[in-house]
Image 1 (cartoon, rainbow, N blue to C red):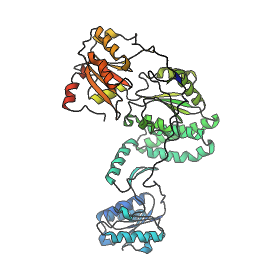
Image 2: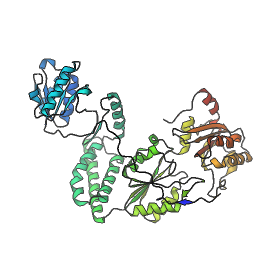
Image 3: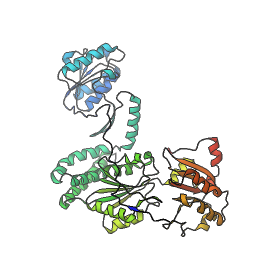
Image 4: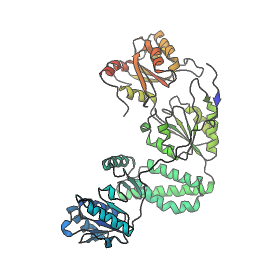
Length: 505
């Protein structure tokens, strides 16, 4: 194999993220505790807005004739009035009622634009932000959809264009944020003053809040009974205070390294833990095969360094990558080593872990979806279909010397009832086929070949082992190739003729 020139990890840093694009609205969170809010109208829609404002601590005045109150508004007023958060004015709104209010909301349902325009003009004259329900043209602000983990509050806006889409987004976010996040938010508020007092700005405070946030998303707190939740939070508080003490006494915090599997390429296939690591990184060392959409999920301030290794191309030496990780971690950085696929499958993670352990640098592994799983999903097959395969073998397609790996039991691969997936074997495709057939495997054995799995430019082909070299050549040797051999792929040609192969979901 020809010698490849080495490049430094510092030689080709990725470009910084672009500046923020245009925003249709600015997300602003307004404190309303103890402030007066006016809701005009007695409809069910007005009741929902009044309840929302009261939940935020506002003193809500509902202006509507008693005869016009909906059942929802009447019920809300009966409970809210007792609590002191809502009051009823048995009359329609006028300009005088808007003076001094923090916000003003009108729901005029099917009425024409006249009342909406009059309300907007009166609120503007009074210097009060206003909203007219379901009439975006007459709104200075909108409410959007809300995910409530107070004091953690997530607001979602579609700028009035698609409220149903906003609700769908809210439902998805609801599944990602544990209910216990409310308790963690309250604990963060309780600890904030102590953190500001005892920890220096910059790396110390950042290290504390990163550890705190990791705990918030990984530790499962009891939801009930309340005593169980209280005990868990007390335990978390004790641990957090100990961490404050440790960081305060240690000066600059030590760095750490997280080895993260980026999956086959599609950003939606990242694990939640991988996304959290990317969003807490100071520096990201990433491979050539990591997609741009995955990198877009990283913290905007993170420095990004390309350290890819590709056959036949100028590549970073593993020793230089190891040294870069050690240097950055010793400088107190959180380093994310971002690898395509899964970090523990043909990613040289073992060498990196050994080096970091020798240097006493904390290291964590975040697994990702390996390419073999992505190939199975793309072709719509099971790699271990019980009618065809009792084993799954993942094999490197070449040795470090650029030849077929001599440590592989080729006779066993040819004789076994297995699905065999070759990684990084594109340039060895012809020799892989010849070796397997030489060991007795039939040239008619089904194969599946794919490149750029899960990406927009994904390419895949199915065929026979005896045609493997031609199949790979048709896809292109300049692409990252995955080769799979086994009877589980026997029906692919018929399936592809009948319907497109299943895509990743």
